[in-house]
Image (cartoon, rainbow, N blue to C red; front, side):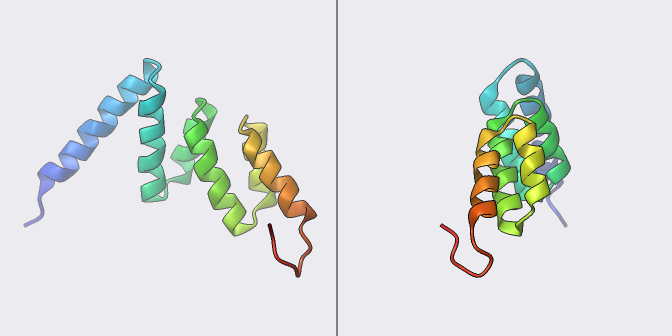
Length: 101
């Protein structure tokens, strides 16, 4: 029989984290981003970026760079995460057949 307490505790933790994030806790916002990344919830990561989470910006940038998604990098940069713009520039400058530094 599955342990439903674990799921319930995760839900409570998420709710608590959301409340703390809404009250201005940057650490709670970062933790929500980590949880969203762990579950592959790119939509939630995007929402967290829109709320000002630099951690969400980092995680989204890492995903977009790994996929070579230039448009997504531009969107993340436009949303306020400057490192995405730097990564976009790096990818645009890299030769197609050479190593990327």
